[in-house]
Length: 171
Image (cartoon, rainbow, N blue to C red):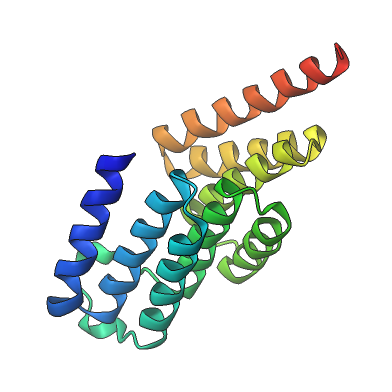
């Protein structure tokens, strides 16, 4: 994760001078994810603030085609994942619920990703039934768009939730 953080920082610094606002937002978001993975709360929040500022300046018509419509909704889902990794379950749950509401039913792949993060939040909260429900919805959405990676992640998340439930019953 140290390598991921170094690469994310280098890309973000390089991109600060030569990319669109959307790309800068995405790069700051990737940096925030790497910082969340190493539990650097202060730096993660600073990166999320930079991402939020940049997405507010975005002009989608200037974005390269590979940005896949990175926008406020996707940034919110990314931020929710960061909060989850940092153990900020209330903020993660609220942010992910808001992202899901904003995404709408047509954004199936993005909904799958946000639902998976929400499932992991529910595992942290020890709400195993809700975690399994979110993971199942994530799997269904990943199946609809043909995302094998999404299907594997959702199935693994549901398995962790069920394992967590069994472990808590044995206590």
